[in-house]
Image (cartoon, rainbow, N blue to C red; front, side, top):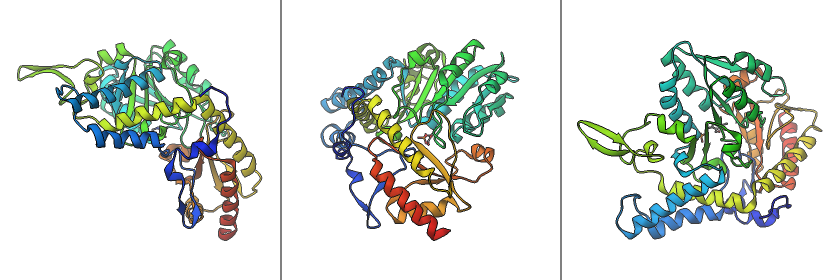
Length: 409
Ligand code: PLP
């Protein structure tokens, strides 16, 4: 699809069968897209096609089904590689963002981080982008340094520059915050880290489905993302790494596929990307993820982003008219996440009452407890939009929210 065209949302919604159902007697309004996205028919069909026609283990198979499955799996890798402007050796299939981060922490991290070094993250990271680095720092006697954020939910860049030094080995930062929607200035963050000789991991879990990412232009050293947040299956994701870094890294897990030769005298490891793909992979997951990327390309990331920005602006303006509501996270650059509090009402109670009206939002700490601590709150209500959502759904959500406030107030 050409870029910058208004999407035909009615027709797009037909691609997502799950959206057409009633929940508690009301049409489902799905505003929990930051937790996981819904899947278009193309993805569902690609998975069922694999099971219906060519289910087989991949690589080294002489027979027809194995060849079909291998081709489809490797095609998916190629689709994803081209999409982010990487080469296929740089696309490692993993379970998701969490595994991508753990892989880098356990390989590159263990190899390069020494006692006295430091790793930098931000106060706004998902637990998956905190705990693996914390564990690595504990093992190595290194320090985890945390970039503070301001009251609008933006990283304070000057503080980042103060934290960066020659002992910084790694900076790991989300492109977009799942809890507040803030888009971080990742290009600047990467440039400054590189000036100090540190490598940068970009947590792309909330970015790959909203933005056209070009890893060469971005110049990140690693990028991780999860298929299920990008209209693909669960249990599959990608770790991108610059080829020279991946080549020099030790393997993560041992087993089949990641070996070249095995003998009791010693084992030699396979070439990229198989070196990091031990065991039978998530074959239908990879194939489904390839279909999800082709679907995003068909709609166009620019069109997706434009529609979601329209929804975000509409919802932000309207929700600000409710005196009981306080927005948490008002950064100038945001993706389609609306985090909010309602007076002294517990977010969970709001979530339950909205569910009774067919509306799915998420409540709680969103796996960002340090961020909640920063704002001195336990959690928020979070509505997160995808391009298949509509302004009519936002109106219904706000009306339902007002009813909930009345009941609880
Ligand atoms: N990082 C961010 C910013 C996320 O939003 C999430 C999931 O919500 C993750 C990491 C972890 O992703 P997964 O659970 O798919 O591994």
